Length: 249
Ligand SMILES: *Cc1c(COP(=O)(O)O)cnc(C)c1O
Image 1 (cartoon, helix red, strand yellow):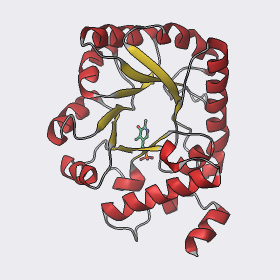
Image 2 (cartoon, rainbow, N blue to C red):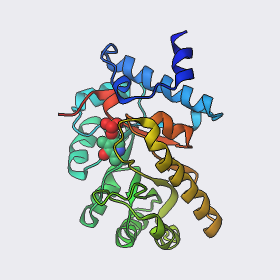
Image 3 (cartoon, rainbow, N blue to C red):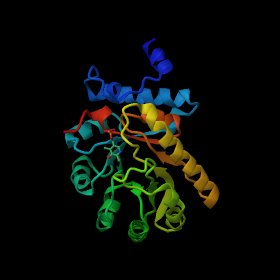
C-alpha cells in the first residue's frame, strides 16, 4: 500500500533518499534498488536496463567490501589516488570500477589500470592518451563523454555545442569504445527540476547518433537526489553515493 502511494505521488526527494529508518547497508541497497525498479516500470522501461553504480568516494574499504558481498557489482570513484588505495584493498576484480570524476592526462595510465570504464572523458588529448595506452595493453576501454547540461561554470564537461567536435574523432580511436554520454546535474532542491537537464542529455545523444551514425546506448545520469527522474528520462547508469552509504564527512 505504501509503495503504491509513493508511486502515485512520485515522492522522489533527497530527504527520502537518506532514510534514517533504514539503518543497515543491506536495507538501503534494497530500498535504492526497489526505487530504481519502480521508476523504470512507471516509465515503461526494463528495470534490468539500469545499472546501479555505488559511488564509494570517502567510504571505508571495509564498508565497500560489505556492499560487494551484498551484490553491488559496480563501484564509482572520482579520484585516481583514492581509487588506487581502495581498489588495492577491495580487489581489482571484486567489482567493475568506474571513474566518474575529472581525470588529468598524467593519470591516464593509472586510470586505465584501475578502471573498467571512464564516465568523464571531456577532451581530445585525454582521449588520445587513454587510447594509446589501451592499445598497448591490448584493451578497448569503454568511455562516455561528459556533457555540462546545466551550463554552470564550475562544472566539468563539454558544452552541448562542442559534443560532436569531440565525439567524432574520439569514437574513431582504436583503444576506446565510446558508447554513451554522462552528466552531473545541477544540485536541485526538487528532483523534478533536474528533469530538463536529463531530457537534454538524452536528446543530445539521439542527435549525435543520427548525425554520426554511432551507437550510444548508455546515459550515465542521476545521483542520490534525482536518480528516479533520471531513470524516467532514460538513464542506464545511476551513480549513487549518499543514499547507499550516508552523508560524506
Ligand atoms: C559523488 C558523486 C556522485 C554521487 O553523489 P550522491 O549525491 O552522494 O549520490 C555521483 N557522481 C559523481 C560524478 C560524483 O562525484
